[in-house]
Image 1 (cartoon, rainbow, N blue to C red):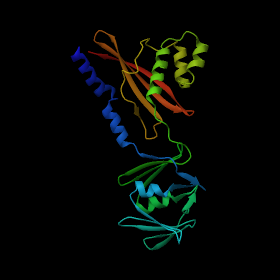
Image 2 (cartoon, helix red, strand yellow):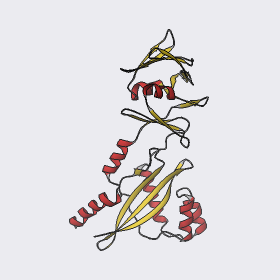
Image 3 (cartoon, rainbow, N blue to C red):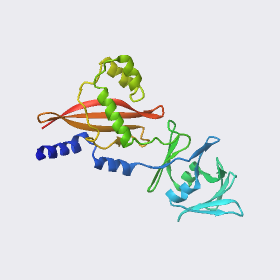
Image 4 (cartoon, helix red, strand yellow):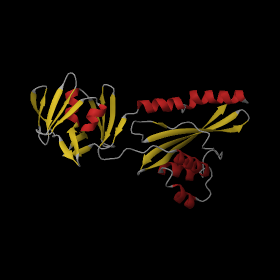
Length: 260
């Protein structure tokens, strides 16, 4: 029996791919989340604390001249508050957005700071977020939409129970009402059409792998569970989640045999 369990663990590590190692790698590669970026007059601005804390630049504030000085070993820029004029390594330049104070916090234009120090910046219109990479810094700066919350253990337990209950559909009307908050429309329609899932097997939420997220915005996630089916045969259930309408929902449910 111990040998079977050992083989099962090895199989899960190599085939299902939802081990704690993969989860740790996912967490390591995820950008640092900044949720208080802003868009003013069509321009993205970021808190100056982000520049000093995450980009590693020296930031100084001159109260008398109302000037922000940002620099490293190779570059130095000076931004005057509420002015589109700046000085980069001794030369005057014109900005597309000034440094400014918003709700008591000093903000600087992201594009200008990025250009001045050679950062790579990409914009995602769906999530209203800027992805910024500079040396070791990897930031995801949200401006208008809050970051998507990760699935919690309690939520996963509920979704596991929901998937168990979706194994058999006896009352279509009741199913539409009950499952609507938990399943995406295509999955709900498919389950109702076939009056349930391909397997009536019940899964324990404790017997599952780690959650993995398929993109840096964490808008899609996957988790697999496994349970004993018959002699030397186990059954895995993989649930794919999608974040839509401000909540997580199950988008797909797949099954796979595991033989020993």
